[in-house]
Image (cartoon, rainbow, N blue to C red; front, side):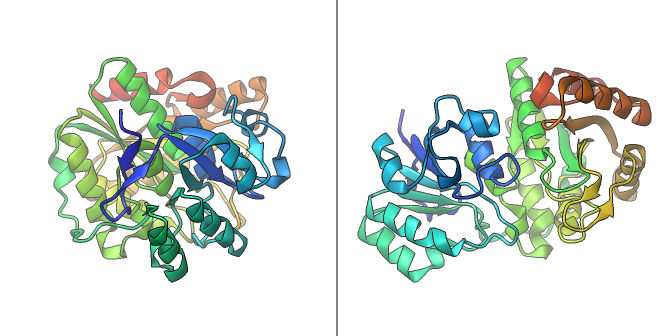
Length: 359
């Protein structure tokens, strides 16, 4: 099997995708390094090391709960001992800018012959110095967040597809929409179902190898981009699980959520919520009760297509087992819908709910 892979944003060139070192300096934790955690948990590449001087000497699993046998090192130089082929940017910061102190690390990685994968809004290929160093050393940069050219305005085509399209939506950003979509896809595949995952963000693309990061699209084309990748997935899958983005309640990112809803025209929605988060992070806006959130999403969809929230996916990573079970019961009592944490307990309960709702 080839150790190279064609990724979005790589200018038509294949990227080494077998041995990856993740750059997460100063940010390697469950919430601060969403991309790193996603790659380690679900990635089809092998993560050989993580760069983060704050946790150097520990193993990834000790810090984020996954990543057995993956060492954390203090520098790129230390990481080279593990013979990486590619450096992956392991964070998705607000605004998607490159931390200034990381610039030299990227240049050094290219000088050492490593390809670079980035999910930032700031495209590394557009940086003259970084692009020059990459070209000089024969390295590939994949700016996976760069949208493809020629995106259409949505035409509402997904409303008429017979396939079961399931969109994850959330009470806030970073509550587990991508993970839930992946868990349901993988769970469906284990059951022999023709299922596919639709990546709509940089981390999902890094994991699945294809997709469009819709938050980098011009606003007019967000729904069209979502429509395109759902229709592509429907060619070979009967069950299509779409990674949600943002939240209808989020003052900054609600636009991308609405674009995804209209573009995908889902047959079902799964509502994702972090139990320990009472407010929209960074805004102090209270998250409404889950039954109200369910009704709101269904009302938003109703004018264009009838759809329902069919299950609640809870994120309980920071709760004790007894607290998590209590939260699951309370969510079910409040909404009347099946609820579970599919990272803690597996996806079967939520998948059963999705299949049952499809009739």
